[in-house]
Length: 192
Image 1 (spheres, rainbow, N blue to C red):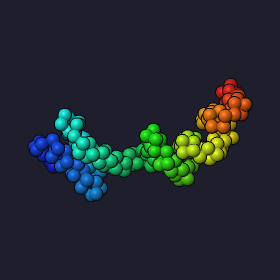
Image 2 (image 1 turned 135 degrees about the horizontal axis):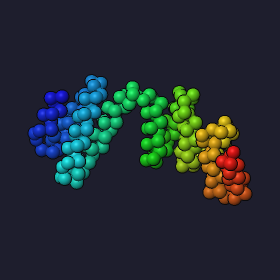
Image 3 (image 1 turned 90 degrees about the vertical axis):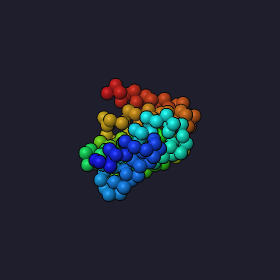
Image 4 (image 1 turned 120 degrees about the vertical axis):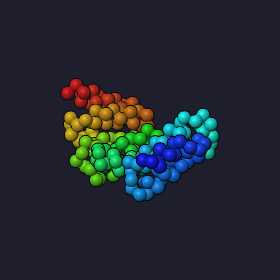
């Protein structure tokens, strides 16, 4: 793409970075996702290769916009390649790892509702419980993990749910006897 090539050749670092970001924005609006992704990647590369920019507060704010644009350009390409349920699950996991528990929970719930027959639904049920716990919705987390533990006996997340229930009893309810019961169930599940 000629425009992207020209952006990388002239001007100061900040000018080139902002021009590449603007090109990405225009291409994104025009739904030229591949080209938008290229423009945002160039903007990010310019930022990372210029010592002045990496220390500049304004440039750091621009980098946050660039990362957001890059994600927006990449999403439709990934949905086409991997499927919406995978992309939504990946986004939920990213949000959970960044401690954006409310957003992650909303995404997990959307997966359970829209894609109930995929492998992502039971994972979303399980990991949504961790979000609920972090949001201090303990009864809801317990109910969610109980659904997982009482679901398919050999389900992928059954053992993890049993352990999570034990930990919940121990840490949140200060109930060591209740915790031991869940841990014994997890041990029996593991033994088969």
